[in-house]
Image (cartoon, rainbow, N blue to C red; front, side):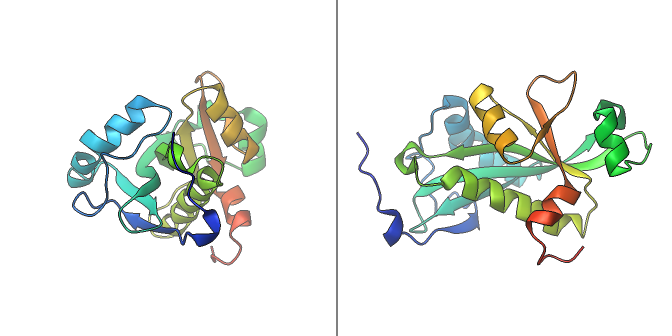
Length: 182
């Protein structure tokens, strides 16, 4: 059994993944593919510039959780019609988006709100970066029904015809972070 860290004594911070500094081997979440990705693939994705990987740590070594961000594109025809009208989505062939490719919380930090902290930071970074490189929304492929419920609780909307693919418009994310000027 894991010893439960005391959340009051922890000072979490986000950092880009550093394979020399962060203990990837000790990270363990409920999904082995997410563990394996962090141990075996994340550094390669960073090097190849196909994903930016951020970790949440309290001590500079132990990984409480991580997420990845990449560029993406949405077919506007995939958007629910009423949502596309409300957002006044342009009728381009593709809309620029940000892909939240992976998000995982260590079992050691379960019940401490780490999942919400990870998602909030991923959305905040996506919004900031959308000011430099346009992004219409953040897209996620939820792993399972539990993940769908998690993302839905934060306002993500399902994309019809794509099982477990969801999105959150950048307009909605802007409302979460009013201090970040558009």
